[in-house]
Image 1 (cartoon, one colour):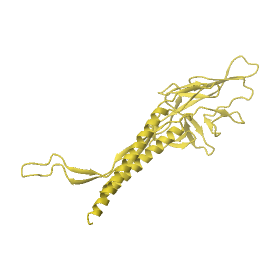
Image 2 (image 1 turned 135 degrees about the vertical axis):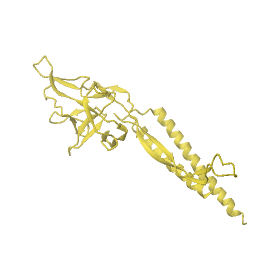
Image 3 (image 1 turned 180 degrees about the horizontal axis):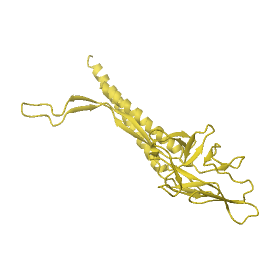
Image 4 (image 1 turned 90 degrees about the vertical axis):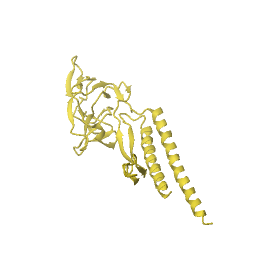
Length: 262
């Protein structure tokens, strides 16, 4: 009975993790480029009261053993990099990736980070930057007097300046991919960093080597499906309640045992 108390506690703790992950998904339902997380769980060690194959007589063995599980633990939270819906903005600096790949950004300390958020702006020097001011890599500079900016599906950036009728290419956006995107470290602010599990970054032109294409004037919204997330939340809550019932039942059984001496 004491064991059931601890088993129920592990279940409540695991379901609390699931609810926390789901809550974060719901909170970011409108975050540009956000990728939902999926909690995963594993059962704990087992208390073996009898091993399978134990001799039951001189000629027979037990076909099954007696094992009692000791609960559950969170084993991983996996980022799901399915595509979100594209939302048309009409902003000529907004970009969405249709397919695999990340935009590469450079932080002030020179560290390269990666993002699916293509809501770009220009800084005081005309450089393309994200909302935090991190420069796009490779750096693209938009002339101050440019009257129009055009971004091709392959990432070619061209501008038209006053007095010109032909567009002038000012840069080439490349995308980065990883063999295991789920291994990237989430830093917040819609950016990820490389880890030993993600593999090395591989940069290529959009639309080549399995990478997606770039769509100008669109942003990729969160891939969280609110109905599914709310269902997950209800499931986690019900599982949490069920595990609390295990603790309550175990407590009542212990109280019954303590009352036997009376």
